[in-house]
Amino acid sequence: MDRLSPTAQTLGSARRKPRPTVTQLAWLSRGLDQAGGKLPLFDHYGQRYDVRTIRSCIEQGWAEPWFKNPIKPDWLVCRLTDDGRALAEAGEALSDPDGEDAEAETPREARIRNLVDDLFA
Image (cartoon, rainbow, N blue to C red):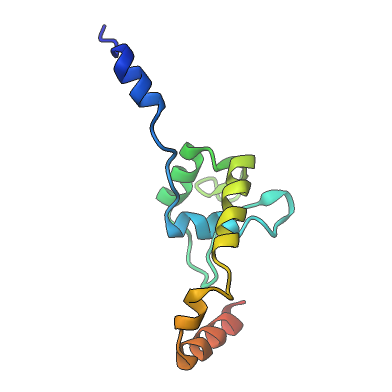
């Protein structure tokens, strides 16, 4: 049986926490407004979230399976964990619409974004 050296054990425990991707953060932040932190199965455009995104968030401890759907057993119905909620709230704070990114958007891009948001909201 191979064991890690004490140095390797120390370095292994000192690793940085994984950072969420933009897609993961978007998915997690959608649970902030839902009762019980329920996470959506579909995005704003009606497309199913990739199961790899969902499973990765579960593995990181940001989401947890909530219940099994008897009608669609292959769908993962999940909710936010405390860590996931903290991460999503921090991500929301960083994506302040009054920040530099909003200023970089042209008026045409803003109109298009608003139209798309109105169509799929």
